[in-house]
Image 1 (cartoon, rainbow, N blue to C red):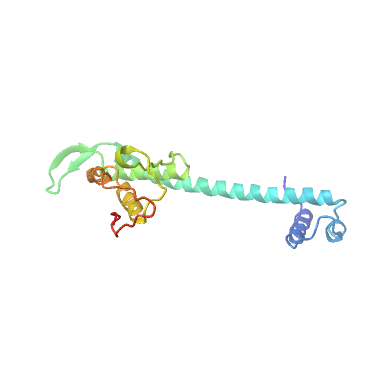
Image 2 (cartoon, helix red, strand yellow):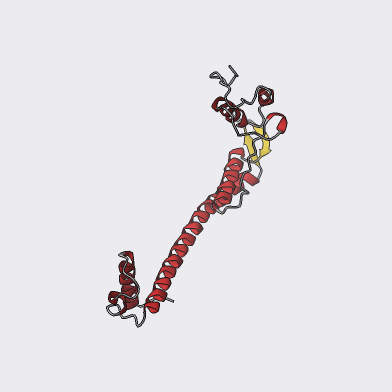
Length: 185
């Protein structure tokens, strides 16, 4: 339900007065704006704020729809190249068989990924940091150098050298001094 121009003007004035800290029972709200009771002004303010949220939600929905239509149009244009086999001609002009356009397949995958991100379809990535031997990481009383080592090795789970580096971690007791590389002095 849309408000009339008079209602919109009254609500805008009400919001301005409330932003200035004018209480609902002030005569500027009750008498000057024509509200019969302070509770009527409160109720109208809630309606005004809700209408604004509805307008924002509608605009966001339209924007989301437009952002979904763009990859859809691109996907429709590249889909045939990514799915239909075509003759493959080599640089020498010779026929090398049939196949799909690999660049088009890559483009399709990226467009699908973009839509999934836009619509929140991907599950959030979970990351777990484990200590030596897959155990828990103790964070109490750990030196800065040791934390930097943990951060450096936690980046690539497929790194074969990372497992060997795990054996190098040693916890420093409180009060022990370490050199720049985290070794106990």
